[in-house]
Length: 108
View 1 (cartoon, rainbow, N blue to C red):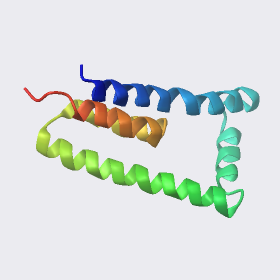
View 2 (view 1 turned 45 degrees about the horizontal axis):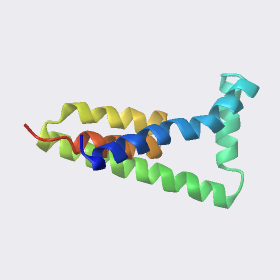
View 3 (view 1 turned 90 degrees about the vertical axis):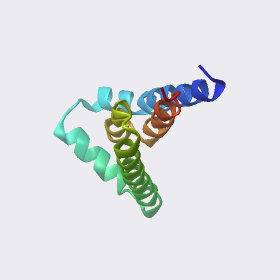
């Protein structure tokens, strides 16, 4: 495996684990419920700065999804579609490097 692929894989793992180190304790403290989800949504709208960051990530996730779908339809690299749920369930910090890792595999 090339150094570049290892870097992408490392970033994908870091992008999955590091954000969860913040989400996990929040969910443990508040429980996994609709009220917890409502608290998270309220936090995203706490002020204009946080709302701006939220929309920045939403737009980046949508752009990444469009890119993945467009490239998968041409390259037929169906496994790369796994980066879409990773993006929306974990975050762009995991989905983007995961897609780049999957995309950079040698074509046979």
